Image (cartoon, rainbow over all chains, first blue to last red):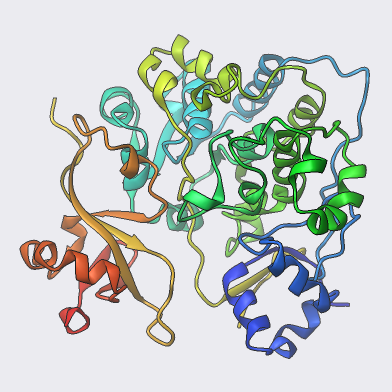
Length: 342
Length: 95
């Protein structure tokens, strides 16, 4: 039996379908006719997979990361779950190399861990020149002279090649927990994902049933019905589409082309069952002040303010951070952690 | 305090790729950046790879700036990835 897929490179796969050359990926197909529906609805902007198992995929994806079910007894706050994760990571007692994109999630992870460890030399920063630029003056003021760092063009290669006994901690899955900001739409961005195509600035807090293409809704409805969190508005649906359908994309974007052993040393900070449960159950708004995208992820912003990064916490806008880059002929990461190049 | 970046930045488009010339990329922009004083929101939100000039071999900045509009708008594949830390301008594609 051919191993199933954990992650795929959407660009060459789209080309393969468009050139009617699907036989070359035949062993990895599930329902190739569905590709045209994904294409029609803009679902091929990035790798997507419905974790509820309600929507078929054209590729043979491995259903190994289901969403947690709704659990009325879950009462933890974001801070509770963060503290548990911090304790877990520190208790590994290893050098912690932070994969830092300059965005809110990884900056929050960096300074939360840095402030929590007793031995500050336990922390190192790995980033790109884009990380430095995205962070504004954070690198110059808070990293450069305080925390050991390595800034390079493609740090993913460092992660793949360093054999040191350490762990790599990223901010991945933060996007998936918190969803997109209310001002991030595909129509006015050079790079955007499927969930950014849904709704408009004007309709974001309206009923999703009246503001999404009806044909698309019909296709998505089985997954929406399977949501562990109530979906009412366009904003809810945008959150659900990234939480549900982009989970694999976040989880494996950086892990493609890595050895299985190396993968075990990579910890996506927000990739835990407890963080997912928090996202499903929380009554906190994603955006504290509706209409102000700089109050999105306000819990992280408040923590960063406490760490002294108040300007960054106040002004940081959402960007699509660039951290990993796979080879152009890389097609699949399989569930046995083998990579397929074509 | 000396800024970490005070140089020209080559902003490189990962896509589109150029068929068999897989290691050739297009430029999205070339601009000067100071990491302590510049506050350009468009650059902070850039989805492209940002590379300081010292990693770009054969970079005739003035020529590129003079022809930037044409190079960017026509997606001329003038920058080549030699390895992870070294890129090179190939002026043949700038014509």
